[in-house]
Figure 1 (cartoon, helix red, strand yellow):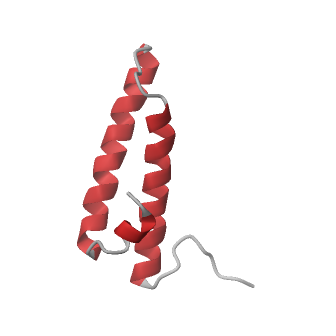
Figure 2 (cartoon, rainbow, N blue to C red):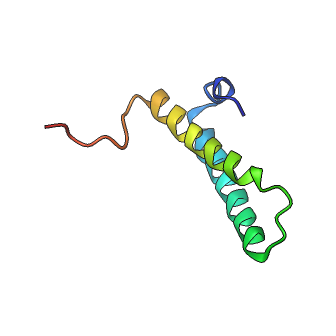
Length: 71
């Protein structure tokens, strides 16, 4: 999913999208541990999608998560 498509999602759908991708990522990690991972590139792709979803959600909500107080 492209970031432009992510920006069109309602704020409530971000959590569902993130959770579904994290679940798929966990399943792929189990497959990798067992040695029968068919698409190793998908792990990297899912990690990036989760990060992009978090970034877009933060931008749309107007908060800056992850930034501490600056001295």
